[in-house]
Image 1 (tube, rainbow, N blue to C red):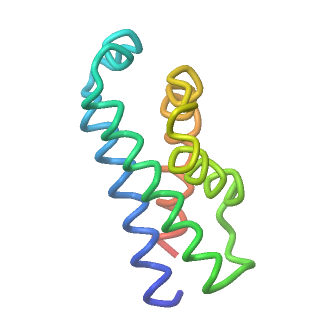
Image 2 (cartoon, rainbow, N blue to C red):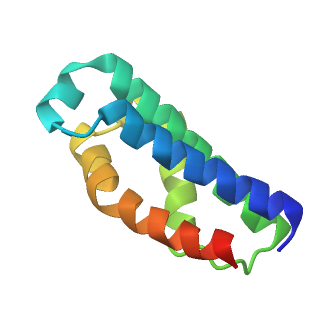
Amino acid sequence: MQRDILKYLLDIKDSIDFIFEYLGENRDFNEYKSNKLPRRSVERELEIIGEATNRILKIDSKFNIPDARRIVDLRNWVIHGYDKVDDVITWGIISKDLPKLQKQLERLIDK
């Protein structure tokens, strides 16, 4: 694996870890929704995940990151549609998609 790709994979992993750290062990949607600081922090980490994924694809367009296009599209939505970011959708991504991506990354990094 190219060194730059590994660096970006580790950046994605760090961002996922930070998101879970920001939200703590007892993740609560209502608390998330009512507090702007963790929402903005999570959104920033999602931007980093999307940008790192995009950079990997620029290096190797066939690199196997499941849902890579969706990840990059999410980044674009958070950045360019900042006023339309939906907390329910974001929470779904945090709850369902990030744990799955985290496991996929572990396999990719271990290769």
